[in-house]
Image (cartoon, rainbow, N blue to C red; front, side, top):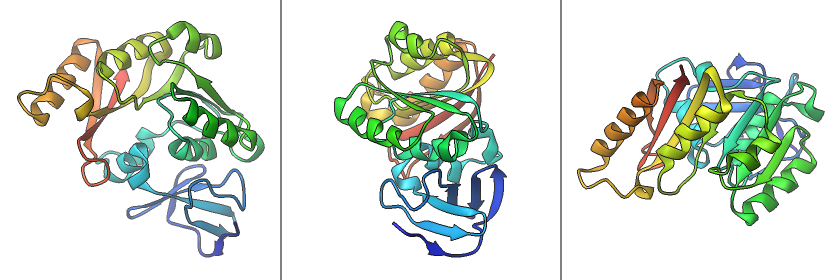
Length: 238
């Protein structure tokens, strides 16, 4: 798909990522191809893909954060672990930033999901995006994930919509996240069963659990309006 011609969108936050108001963009690692029907914009720098925050919890957090946007993003060329990768919307934009065209930035994304249909889509994406490593696995099975990602990472994202999400996240951070690394946890309230006191009380309980585990909470980002009943916790492993 050919993109329309235009000006450079906004200002560069990190290489390959730009923000202009509520619009966010990544420099396309597969020029002339989009992933989910997103807008493509050709500039003198290359082709940019518009990141739809209504289809990406990380995208929504990037729009909603009150801190510097770069705090939420991994650095180009690094290795990251993504638990609950889904069909690849967010993964594709992360790949733009971390890996770039033909993986000229030498990044790596291990994208874990338990659903075969999601892995089919991720495998298709990986064919044209070197550096993307799809893995069919349960996020709780550290031995399986560790066989593909034996080294610790500086950035970990979890979007696993099942019971005990908090325990899964804490355990994964202890096993895979470097000290000082960023752990981003998208909590879906409806997936937990202990919310008799309401959603807000449940989010407070989750924050207490994260703090008790030794994590530092940098920010809690309410995704309502983009992803209802979701809170994104940005944590640091200390």
